[in-house]
Length: 197
Image (tube, rainbow, N blue to C red):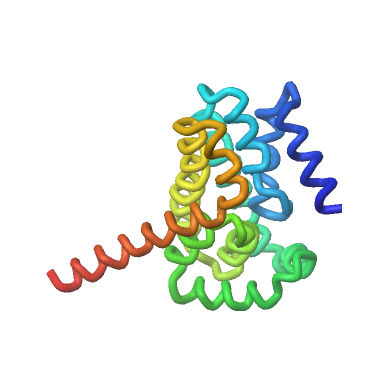
């Protein structure tokens, strides 16, 4: 079932309204849908590299709006809709860990988990709502994190084209994990330097 859904989403990248479908997939993936928008973003950028930045921006905008929808599910509807989504993906344990992590370090959690595609972003958005993270902080962090994620993919494809496509499709988790680790490491370094200064 998951493979059929994946193939259908990938086929939408060839649709004449592909940009609209890309926006829709980016929106729903941030709150409940299992397939990440990269499945469409990669072939769409490869088909027209001049539109790489447009597609990355579209993914970012729709994903952030979808993330706010996920936040609302966690904030207002966790006991009904939220619990159902978390159990649907068997993320009960991950949710408990994420909720405690949000209480301790919301921004770092969003940066790391928002960039790494193997961690469902819907888990982050719903958890942020349940933890009642400041909505403005959530939105700003979502914009930064999702833009970095999608613009990184678009930039690599724009610059290197086909040779990097297979690498990104197979190693997207590794690419964004290294990027996230470097980014968080930079935050920690700045924090240490400021506290010692």
